[in-house]
Image (cartoon, rainbow, N blue to C red; front, top):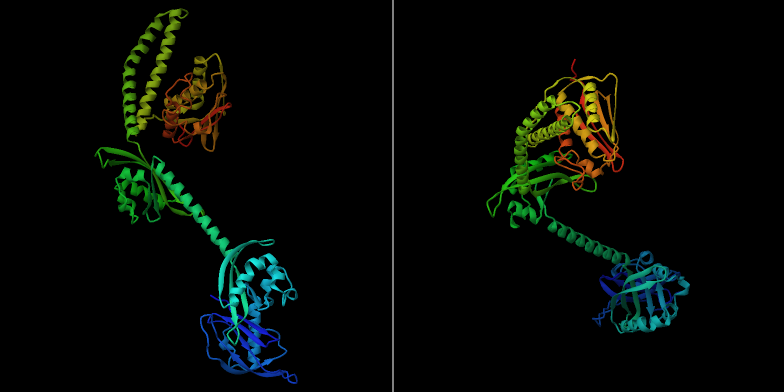
Length: 572
């Protein structure tokens, strides 16, 4: 699209016009100027001519121009000048001039003498010149000999032969950096059809170019990130399901497709989660979408579409959020845990069988050891050995009982508790005394209880079992010895028991899993014996009493295990 240009030359009394509707034209005003009058009446010949047209009839019109008027320019069609009163034409020319001067494009007119006849303010600003330094100056002098000879002059020569040129260039600028410019050279035709001048309009589209480059780089970066995410999704071994707020599937990786036996075409229309064939999963995702603060996990039973064998999938669903922390849907991770669940089943069965098989011979070992111990001389070697046998048999019996309890808990069965009035202070004192007898060498046991300790409604045997497991761990993971300190006090309506050791401690990750069944922080450490069920059983026993458990630990410093028991059920 051509930018409009009007130019009024006081010497020639002409107007150069460039508009979208026509090629540049020259309004020539022949005749004498009446110096006695402030107005001069002339006959104006208006010729509209383009490079591809010749011999267009000349239209005659009479106009009155103020001879004292300064050159006027502006973007209007030539028809606006015809048939106007002199004052209207003067006003129009003044508007044209303001339009050209306010244009962001660089506008210049070069005459046949290769001198500047007109430049606008944008041109002067970019070139760092004053108007009086440019008007009527040779183009070669203003732009420099090399640029003029190699680029500008050949283009001007083509224009003076009637050709129009347009092109884009990128040039460095000492103040503005790299400029991207669209340049148009357009011939200005006079009344006789000859080229009177050349209009040069330069449009700076650097900002647009930079914006386009920025969009291109952003698009390339987004495509790269998308490709990277796609590669990650394709390489992970778990199934991934992403649903929107309406529960429609918007993303399903290949692993999830295989787990649920789905093909590509079935997912093109973003079907609901219920189309996965698992009502339990659809219900779980629905709960997440209804309560955006929760997360959920469940085992799903499905059938392998290839082998027909049953499979167990574990699905964990959490809300998905955008940068504004607004919920956008749900993300579900699906794992095939068929093998793990089978191993768990086999492990539970083995534990149950082993615990029961141990109970029968242990009962005999304990019974006969007690009989022999009663008949042996208290100071004899036989009595010492029998006491060791009896102690180890009792320890093994407690381990068998713990295994049976854990087996019941993992199977979803509750272990029974017998609530009775329990003197917690007396029970703690007896448990500490027993530990002192069993570990007299390296460890020092201390306890401090609030006076007087309350009487709680609890299963004394189970609470003692929990204390023994915590104290046993404190001894086990303090191989260098040290102090094991137990404190008991009333805190916020609960009785809180804390046991702190000076042992090897645990990392935050190990501490977060300390209450898991069969978890051992360092299974390669052969000096620390056990199956990893002690703290798991403690947690279960305390929760059966409506209490809570927690653990604090620091590597190389020690560990503190604490639990609370409610006092609102205290016995009399």
